[in-house]
Each structure stands twice: as structure tokens, then as C-alpha cells.
Image (cartoon, rainbow, N blue to C red):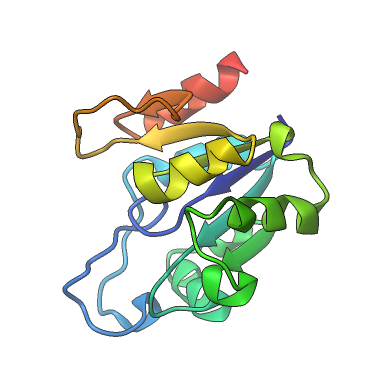
Length: 161
């Protein structure tokens, strides 16, 4: 595996859907617990990518929010559906990212909190998938190669690959 794609809201940073406007304008922005340590442990061995549908934000707005918690430095590539012209779970979202960064989908892994948006499309595109099931949803998540319940568990998954 050469690259890891992370969803943004509720995977890297806590999403507060009740707050109006783009995340960078919110009075409070927060890391997902454990995420900073995970990114620190992965940054030297993998190309780290962040990609989102982000309803109110384009890539620039996402970067501005990431800067508020000093998270931007961990990612080499940044993508939003507004810039890609296609939304998750469409497999073209993931294929377009793989093409732009020059890494085969089979050498990439997607980590996200939405099984429907993050995991299914990435799996169909040929990527490994990690469903961040922090809310402990029940179901038959057949497209998830791995399921984790806390971000600290991601380091264990990556070490197995």
C-alpha cells in the first residue's frame, strides 16, 4: 500500500452539522480523538490524501479548517467533490483521485465514517477500505475490508498490510 485517503468530516475532524456555514468559520473545530497521533505515525511511510463531499466547502475551505488544528501539514493531496465534479460514492470520485496522484487504486486505502459514501465506492474502485464505525452501527458491511471503532485501531490495521 502506497497511499491512504481519509474522509474529512467525522473522520479527521469532528463535524457539527447544526453549525451554519463552512467548517473553517465555526467557533470550535476539533480533531477526531486519536487522529493526530495516527497521522503522525503514518506520514513518513504513506502518501496521505484527504477527500470529501463537503456540502458547503471546496478544497480551499477544507484546507482553511484543517489549518485551524494544524492538520493540513499531514496531507499531500486535497480533494473535494466540488473540485472533482463527482461525489462519493461514485467510483469515479476515487478513480479520479488515483489517476491524479499516479497511484493504482489497488495500492490505496480509503478510511471513512460513512459506509455508504466512503466505503462502497472505494471498494468498487478497487481500493482497500477501512470503515470507521465510531457510532457502532450494526450491519453486514461487506465492502469494508476492516472495521474500526476508534481511530487508534487504524495503526493496527495498517501494520497488518
